[in-house]
Image (cartoon, rainbow, N blue to C red):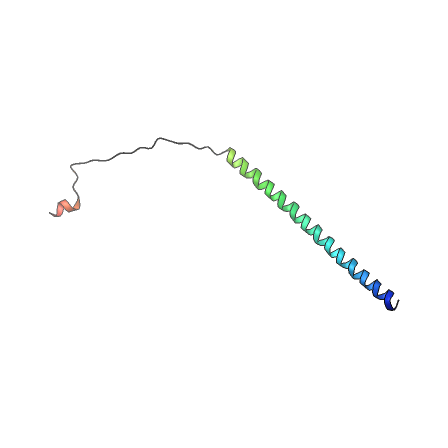
Length: 79
């Protein structure tokens, strides 16, 4: 082939190669998306199981003051 027909054939081959590359990229992205969805689903399942085993408890807060009149501080001993 020569001339215009040969050029058109070359352009069509280039277009075909470009489209094949686009399809391959889309397939790779699709596989990565499926893997990401699977991973996210597994992590959500694990997190849900962890929350189901979580138990929150609350005990009454205890405040107290200790008083010992027989104990002296260092300042009192120095005077």
